[in-house]
Picture (cartoon, rainbow over the protein chains, first blue to last red):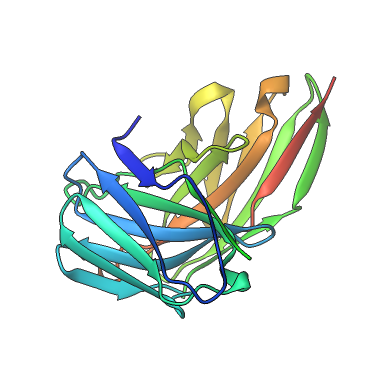
Length: 114
Length: 115
């Protein structure tokens, strides 16, 4: 398995509170991604990073922010959690050196906003 | 913008029967295409990928997919389903480097295998 660790694995939080999810990799890969998975929608990209301090928005970025201060860590923050952000969140990484490489996924974080 | 369409959100097959999962994509550049599998409460695992080397791609667990440019399709097949194939399957296309190398996923197809 690729060295990707997501924390926490499960979290229940109240509406309006800030939440931070962490993705940690040991592969030294350049690209990191945050997706959310919802039934019928597959996985949708929230934010991604192509290097330290280099991030960009995905298709569902509203209400989320990210930070990447080190190669190995990519943080996803829900600034003020809403019930619509109840979802399973996946982090993925990809090596920049080989154009043919696939993305590797973490085990996911199940977030429930009540 | 690229997109992926998977026909059928649920597929039911009998053990030993053919598995066919359909995927059509749109992409403005020659695509990198992927099939991932997700078992319950787990992350996504790569089944196979198309990277322009060959149109018929073989993956793990007996799966294969054929890239057809004229049909913009990348359907996934397995000749004989096994109970362990019960999972959700996702087709994905990756954008160019200029567009951030982003993966765009289809909505997924959940496979049920009947004994």
